Image 1 (tube, rainbow, N blue to C red):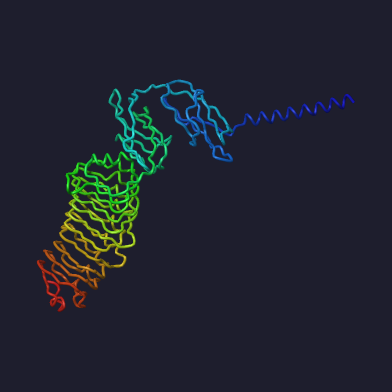
Image 2 (cartoon, rainbow, N blue to C red; image 1 turned 120 degrees about the vertical axis):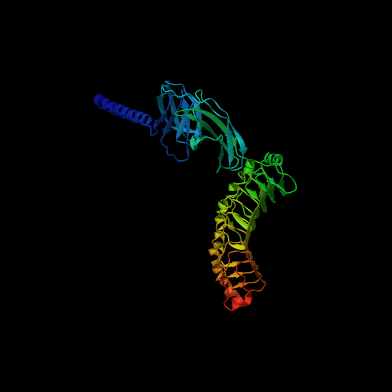
Length: 478
């Protein structure tokens, strides 16, 4: 009997020990592991593996028993402004539904600074322009005692978004509205660096009801201070009735919607449209007129659709229209005027549009009219090509079969009109004038011999000027 009782007690003891051993194994075996992935004399980065739970898992980061980051979703963290040649300990906690489900410790020792490099000086980062879905930050210059060159990198959270910068500001796009972001700018001198932190909250929606006309930089700044995200009518930047001193549109990056039209005109000091690039809705019209120094049209790069017309007139520094390459047209075909832009080389940025009327005049070095290739219906409303001395390739006109208005070609270097061979009819006038090298007008035979010019036939001051009867008789070239 005693032996039986003793045997039962031994069995119970074995079970208890076994259960305790299993519990200890479960406690000590963690699936969360932490590694030191970057180590410097004044910084270190630790990384860890993802823990999968029934819901989203977040992480707490401790250094020397102090909580330095709470409930983050990143799988790495960078410690900065550490002491050289110093031991540090810490831990990462995995949190699910407010409960710690895993924990793992780490230890590292910062390096000793044996280099001749000099630590960059402290500097200050601030927000230059606060936006709705973007923001521009700026910072003061960092330096070294030996005048070594400094470059900068920008981190949002712990993710580097730009590096090797020498400018002292950065535009940060693709943000969420009404959201807080933090990060730091890092100034590098070789492997040594100094960080400057920043934090900002993108703005909430704010609607301006009505038309906005901004004539001066002060008016721009006053408007910007309200952080408007939408204008229910036109936006006009610069006007003919006052000398504009506008130089900076960066604060307008809060805008995402402008209802109606967008005009940038009569600005004599404005060089860039940066600040308008978040406007992405459909626009009725775009006018860029008489801007003496304007060369950068990137502010128009997000426009979705153009419904009516675009005018690019009297802008001596614009070289390309590529900023419009993502824009399509709406229900109706659009009118395009491109006039007196001295440095404009090509207009391919509008080639995706379906065109109605086209006016291309007095562009000194324009070398192509490839935008006309977009005429899917082979029909134009009006076509004026006047005084573009570097324009020698008229081959896109070979697509055109019908012009509902007038055809005008003047002051060109053309020698023939063969690219008009497929033109079947014009409802308006045909004006071919002041083309000093034009000796062959046989490209007009199709519409002349079929009596398909509904307007006037005006051919004069060319190298050869055949009458309608001449062309009918086959005497169309000299």
